[in-house]
Image (cartoon, rainbow, N blue to C red; front, side, top):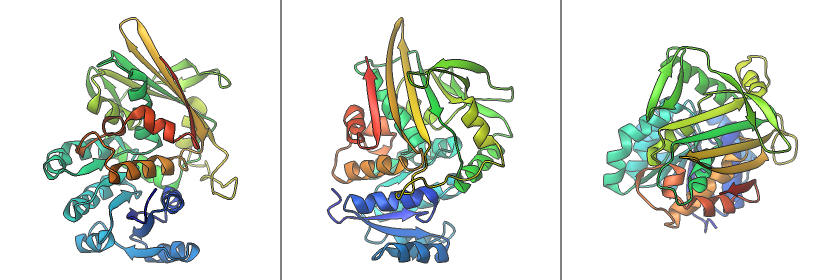
Amino acid sequence: MGSGQTVAVFGAYGHTGRFVVDELLERGFVPVASGRDEGRLRELAASRPGLAARPATVGDPASLDRALAGAAAVVNAAGPFAATAAPVIDAALRAGVPYLDVAAEIEANADTFAHFGDRARAAGAVVVPAMAFFGGLGDLLVTAAMGDWASADEAHIAYGLSGWHPTEGTRASGRVSRERRGGGRVRHANGRLEYRHDDPPVLEWPFPAPLGTRSVIGEFSMADVVTVPHHLPIPEVRTYMTVEAAGDVASPDTPAPAAADGTGRSAQTFLVDVVVRSGGAERRAVARGRDIYAVTAPLVVEAVGRVLSGRVRAAGVVSAGEVFDAPDFLKALSPHVSVDLRP
């Protein structure tokens, strides 16, 4: 698939970045590992013979230019994305190559759409933020569930995780987001992002079997509240998280993910239940899989392959469901994600 094309991965030595590097190798791309920690880059390169390592920091544009030299695309896997997204996007635009990231930070994603839309569109560049489990998968599922609907009244994305062992990057990104919100929370309602300081509701969500009805945190907003309404006229976009998983990620004592097999994947399982409503009609999409961090790699690498082969529907700053054929993309993920569309 990759035909030997070079793809730079910024933050390659991080938990998700390593999965991305391995997925690129598996698909025939030539990854170039980059990031600020030269020691960790050398360690990663030593574990994967032939992997090039190019240290770079977001405060040094010339180092980013060197990291992207000769690359056909760049994947940013280094959070917090509030600090890394803009400098790496700038470098991608200078190099004239597509940019994709795996950001789950709502504010960072909103910034990317707001600040780079005109520049990327004028350059004919493709910039895809949140091409990950949170933001990318949900957007693809909502878009596929919509089918021939041009608009909808509301979209609901419920996450049923068996547990959530957050990475160091997840915790760092969460701290940045909370600081930017002044400790509040965010939701997408009435056609816009709303910031609130009250407690989110707790309710029961009827997940499909075998999960069944579970207690969820309502308005547990993830990147989907930015990616979905960016291109779909849906005034109410809500995301939900099972209470146990929300408690895991909030607790400072929850350990990081532990590998359960030779690929490095954890034993965590997920079920994503999407419901879209318009008038009195309802459509649904369900996705099942394992390890939210590991599954981000096939998501973003599939996107890289489609961008580089010209299988895109738009240029500029675009979300997954906007730029790709959502049902076809989800079908391509079948080795990693089982999807059931219920019109």
